[in-house]
Length: 534
Ligand code: PA5
Image 1: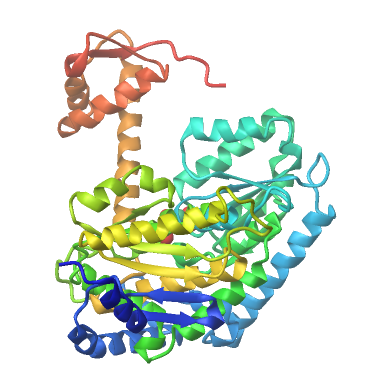
Image 2: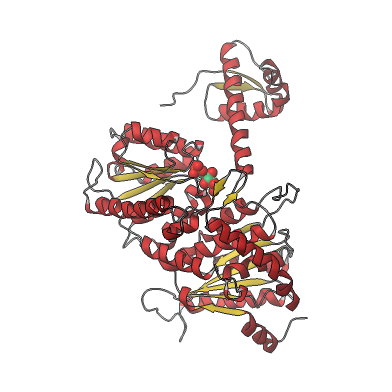
């Protein structure tokens, strides 16, 4: 039975927590946890807070990779375990400021004059944070450089960006970001960008900057190629928690965004979310709600609905932060747990005209995290109806959907923030980073490695090795035709017939010197004259 409005108001008063120092409020009233839940979880959450304190002191928090986990030091360098690390963090922020100022003033310029565009090349944790922040805080009227992204190895995707930059590459600075410095998608993006510069008669090196681990393949490339500059990425910062390192700060500073505000928001949120009083710690509360709603095993998906266009990419950013961190097969004791929380979302009220229908009435396999932004816009609003603005509508749709969902037994958390400022974006990033870390402790998993991602990278490498073998065999026998199965056998990989078939159909579709007769899986493939790739 739906509780009465009076009962809901009573619960709201009990479960609404304001943090004026962060411009943040957390409403847990639409999560139907019983009174006993928090008491029962007090010991586990205290253990999680202790583990987090150890992590912040520099303990080995990523046991598989034997690494420290230090993203919290980025906003408070004094907390880093050594004076050398503190100094490096501070120096990097200063250098980012100085570099961005030199770019903005034209002291550092492209071959065609002062830089106007910023092309960021990276993927995963080396792209999602910069993309989220660029969209959340950028504005065409105030951006110092216009941001663009290569975040994939999709040739057509890159061509579309390059078409936007046609004739402007000489005033485009490329920031190539890869912690490992060896990620194929990012390397390909760099090579494609470099080819575009070369085709335009320009030296890529005079427009390129690297953010990467010292000594990585990318670092060596940037050093030997005399790129404009290299910024460090430390092994104790994970990709998906790297927004407050040079990975996020450099692109943001180049775009002209207030990175000090971002760092301050994240740092203040860190202070609040270190509290051991669970009721006063919004990250602990979030982690506990996730645990309750998903029964500690991710049985409910998290739908993230910010009612603000600027925060549109937050769901995508959180999807990686949460799912790459929590989606683990084994727990820390080696038991199979298949942990995780699925995350998706986009923005309200737009999504009300898409999948919210199913949320209201369909399969109940989710909970919602609403994000309410109090400030509508920087200036005054017109009235779209007497006494009512567009922003009032947005607010009305949020409240309406929240209550319509709850009436139908759909639970939600609501986060309210003051605005979509650098400070607030820093708060949101730090809040979810810590909630993820605490939840990981509650379910006893390592949030800081990504063995599944590594497995995908290895599998892709073996597909490309198979492609080389298959193509070489066809080239060596130009007079013969092969079915995929015959070709797989001929190269000694009979069990890979399906992959060989998929490789050949891809090469054929792209005029890569493969033709065929017949259709379907029994098609016969043979060598054909390759189309020019220049
Ligand atoms: O969060 C992570 O660790 C990953 O998503 C990485 O950021 C991603 O794989 C890119 O790695 P790199 O920065 O080494 O190119």
